Image (cartoon, rainbow, N blue to C red; front, side):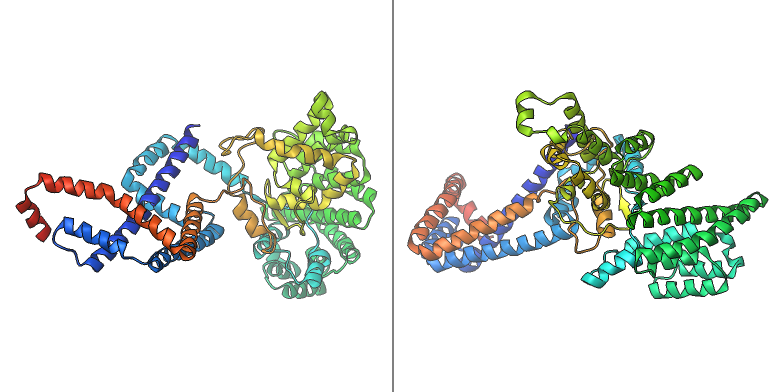
Length: 554
């Protein structure tokens, strides 16, 4: 509460500073205008009388021009503020007020003291935010040649960003290369191929490597990027499996002969696991789901320590396709652990299983009359848990937001992860009768339990603020990135919009009803100058006339 109150006071201070700055600027220009017109008479009394005479002789056209100019200036400020907010996510005026005007009001000392008192907490939160915004390889990523490129051929749009493809290139260099590759000609060629930006150059290098010998990584590259169908990719991956299995067995026997052989065996292990996982995904794409499940189970038993590929998420999706819900529950019992990193797949699959037990008979009207049963309460709590972890998923599952092809990398709790999950799991939610209805009725209730402005989480750590920036780099430009929490319009955009509308309305009324608005304007200006006239009369009555005459001459 203290942090929220301090933030509100800082915003209020910035608003007051901006309002006073704006009003004093307007008054400054008005005074300059009057001084120029009236050439500054010697006596203040004469000055005020001359001002009153001048204001009484103004025509309605003057007021139309004045209010119209004010409306135009306010409109230009509004357009600039809106553009700056859309591009940088903050108000330009607020940023200038906070960085330049607040130190004049003594805001730096308070902040510096707060920062010194909470330096340890900030460093811990910074370390946590770095881990929260880590980008992960999408375990259900599509095939570039057979799926992403076909989308480009049909629509003319690029589904992958340069940042996403660059991350994939780094992954390939990490998984498929080692320091001893230069000793083998084919591997040396592939080491350069993974660094190549041009797809055709990579494909040509892979063919060149295959002319030397059977290179597993060359087959992987061709299966990923050159194959135009899943069947072609599966055929190439089978050839890669034959070559990779032989390399793995040879390096397994030599891994203890030195660090060089150990690094080579680690690389061959990564290559073999990747090939088998992609073969299982090919089988899943081609409708051989039971075969895919068997391949994934065997792979997880053979390499239980390689959790970086998140093969269990591929297994969960395949088991849901088979409607083997008991097996899904067994996998969740193993991986939905507090010590393991969560994902949208784990949280929403757990919610789906609990919703399945009650969704077919769930009715919001009946639940409001009799209350929720224990099973319904468990399902609602599971949905709230999933929505708190990733609040972007429900809009895709409920088809309130259009889906696009998922990226090759995702940010956990971000829009990219929500797209990747909904792209493959929407069909599973539709298959369970009433599950989407239960989700529709209950998911928004999650936000009533999450503290705002999200200084702490409810069931998970606080929602990271860096997800929007990372998602904009991972997702294509034609996709409207889902943002949570939704950014409110800054005060200054609303203030400028109101000012622009008010002055435009005054200009319109003055143009339509010049005489009436002239009367109102004269009455307003007379009322405005009445306190000033009163003060000047008192000052003249108190000060000697000779002294006042000398001051006015100066």
